[in-house]
Length: 414
Image: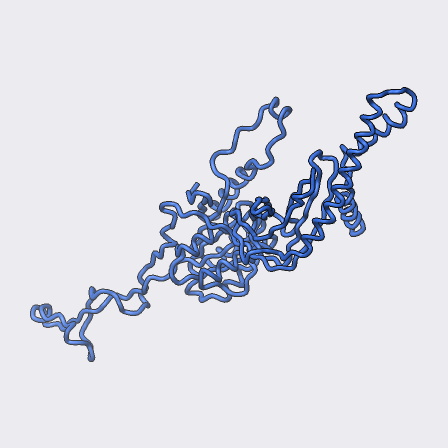
């Protein structure tokens, strides 16, 4: 298996370095056949020079692409990584990485992409006669190495050469927060609290009891004493100050970027209360500030295959009095995490609810007709997970867990 992978990598690298593309090879073979086979038998004054021109064009493009690639590689190897300290998903950001782009070379085009980290769309803008990099990240994460792939090709599409350059640089990509729509904050997340009979007496003076030694004379009900000859005093109701109702937990899983954006919104907008207690998969201790919670969301990407594993560790580090209710941010794709969440809620007898973030909205398009299927290639970006999301929601609600589906782009509850 390792040998097969190494061979594939070697073949892919060789294909990137070999300048001639399939079209160039076909054109070169036809030109060779015309010049050395066809024209040698018949004196053709049209095809023979055309074959020579075709051979010269392929050779010239191969030389230009090869030497242009060498010049570009020598230039970019001297440049710094040019990365900002932080990026945000779904936001096009200029990185500060600039290069000449072989502007003085004829017939050559330069393109740029990222090999690592993956999921980065790269565009080039011309500013002051230089090509400036603009990136749009699709997924959050934290990285220590960036690999860019530069591609040089000719305007005829005959030759192409690619090479990779790596930089050791820290890069942090945070999830884009969901927009806050009207009535977004659920009542449970806004701090609904109940009176606690064991709490400190700090409410209004609405209750009465018999007078005891040490009670303030100001609280004596003198009118009641004059009427009944019973010495009663006023006392406050026992109630706790409003506190956070929910402990929030982010469950990592496939396609969880929108859910991470929803979690960021709830954390940064204060929808989880002033006394924040937030935890995400893969962390050692709960976060008590919005900044720490965001860092946990960034690092949770690597835990997608183990979503929900940190629930019991989280519970062991919390005061049992706090762990009475929990708000989960979950991925829109079903997986082993669902059984872990349901089991955790049952073991601790929690009042729990779930928020699932999505990026797509509206109804799924109708299935294509047979003629459309033959004429057009089906769009791979269609929302094929929507029926799966409906089944996931039904399965969670069957376990007594209310589910809210939040659209990240609009903040609307779907």
